[in-house]
Length: 219
Image (cartoon, rainbow, N blue to C red; front, side, top):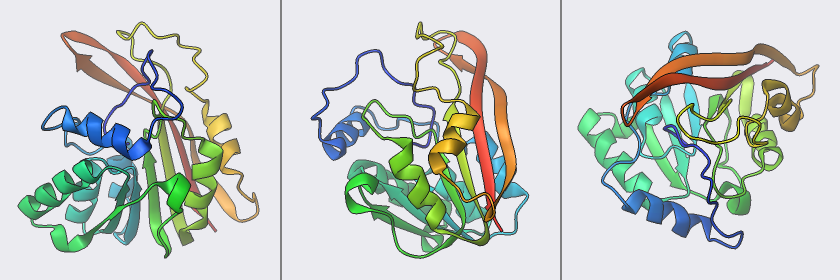
């Protein structure tokens, strides 16, 4: 999801309805995420000629709006109607509403939007709800256009102030993430596989956050 969600110690019950969960989560405050673009996405997309982009789990639209400002035509997908309403307001305010198509969708239940995209971005897809990589990432790769890229960024470790176990299995290694995508090695080139570090502040604590990054290009 756009923004920097961290798995909670108290996970919701397994039968929680995902749309209700996320609408409830967004409904708790006027804004959940910072509204700023995720830094690895800005670094990767900023070096590419603008084309078509698919933003998975777009949240309130920080990434989608940034991409649209750079000239991309963006399809922004999220399960939460509340998040997409906020995206629509912000896109209008930024003057890029004509470059963003918002789609409300449960990717596990409803599948992916049709079409092919020069850039498919999955930022911080870790969720308190079950969202198996091996069910979401292979179809994400399938909609990448020839010569296009799939960018996956995940939290590589809990934030130092969280008190969470650094060995929590939800923090997959870059090798585990790319294995879950299950790519045909002849059809794809790995452009980036590793970690990115950034400094962040939360409630007066400053610390280093680790992100795991997978960037692959369809030949």
